Length: 309
Image (cartoon, one colour):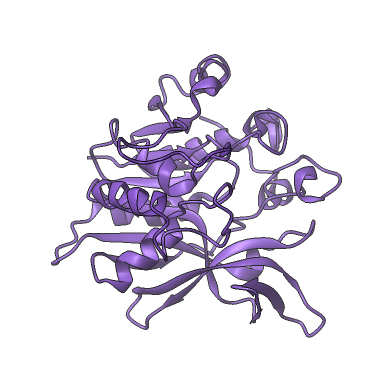
């Protein structure tokens, strides 16, 4: 069975002021969404699920989904701003719950192995091929086996300013040992990089594998996501990303995965997907960048590859 692509699109437009993925970034007016779905289809994915906010659905139905009809099956899933019965909504909270909650929103429409990507990142064909091959293989063991597409840090740095990345440690056997969020990563004067982790300076060489939020999961992840989200709402330690403000805390995929591998409830293979010009965004005015097309994948602009079905 062909795997499914789950595209996290519910957070788009909050900084850019519109649907950034509809902006042309390549030859022939190709958009980020065109590159994502085109590369996934070439890698053998059979369907795409776009996770959006309910109010975004008309724009997706009118402007996005028709582009892919006849290419592969497409549908939407809603990331709703609500909490499970018995949980309490923090007073004054307006920020979406985060990427792990967005994946959970796809639970009702995804019943086969699937990949997760951000809608406003460019990954490259090789990454889809790597993750697609993993999803089609059987993985026996005493716990769920998933995968992360890792990219070299220095290939994901933006010229527009500091970036946040989940920095990974992978064993010699290829298993993810830890994943931690490092904020405001930028080049330093010594030829390396530095960022901030838990309020402390974190120095990096540039060859470290980082997550760009491209994961390979099976439906076994959904019960863990539900359990994790309820723990997050209770404010339990180790369930949220770096932000501590109750109105800004986020339930993030790397945080969930770190907890699961630490408790040996899942294992994650760290696949190297760094061969192509992937995982890079262009300047985003919302992040202080100037010029260019906001969110344009740098590799696409350099290579000039066209989308041709």
